[in-house]
Length: 139
Image (tube, rainbow, N blue to C red; front, side, top):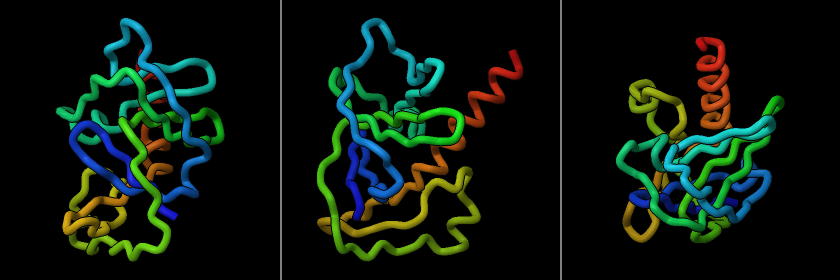
């Protein structure tokens, strides 16, 4: 099963089994940063992570909760539109996959004659955690 998630500028497909929980969240007052964290979780704006110009102004958001061994990563999106049950996602060709800066895109699906990129949210969560760990060690 696949989830279609929406950021301000884009739609993405996410495998439902990679998301432990979907949660509604409100933007924290006075927090314009794309990332905030506490002892057990890190929250990141998915849109801004993938496209610096994809910044949401919505107050009410949806969090895709991705548990990792040491911490939980919450990827914020504007909406979870619908579920796709039996869809044939086309894997990215090897030539294109090799050119990606991050290995987060795994395939694409045509919905209403528009391609939607499938994301590996577990890989995104691991990258977020590694960056935070690296940044903390540099301080």
